[in-house]
Length: 283
Image (cartoon, rainbow, N blue to C red):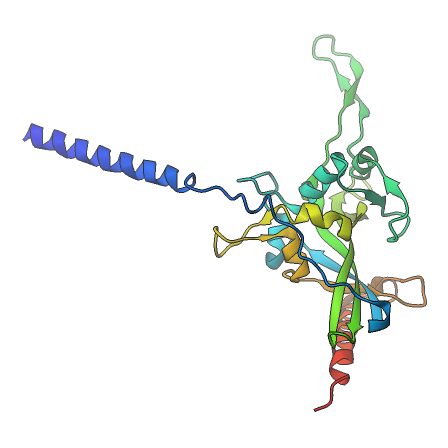
């Protein structure tokens, strides 16, 4: 009887061991090399003479929405994947991307350094008065600030919608991306009020080469995934309009409307562009 029990335990251990080997081998039997060799989707050339209508649009992509979680997660590198803000920060630090001052305008005229980007995140070195445990006296101590990428909860996208008579379709080109930091101040007056800050602008055409080489998590299939460039070009994100080009210095909708009226204005601009394309056709 004891021999039978021992043999049974041995068989179980062998079977479990083989299953463990299979589980480990599943992730190792192929490597995704295609991602590193990807190139941005080639966009067709557009002639000025073919554009009969155009409108600049600014929209917000809220990363807290479930549809946009692929842009926010993972907050730390996982299986070679990272989120969008970490990818952009890495590109700026390595000199691959140029960051532009979001306090100036969205025309990409004022480049800033990686150190200035750190300052925009509040990641500066500060001096604090702390108590020395040995002497009991207050001493000055330098505290190195850190960038907190998880504070970027929204993106602002600047794009141009235009009607191309060559293709007889309404088309769009993204011009820039601006991360928006949502944080709380340390002072006692406004510590309970969320602050929103545009950190920097990135030229999208310049960033496409980098975005095409990083994949976005596909919740339906681990073997097939899109790149960040695919996600933006194929419009696989949810957003809402916050401004359109106008005669008032491109003012934002929230500067003259609020609440439900602001939402209705955003929808009105969206419908206006859609109806423009539909009205060009006759049936």
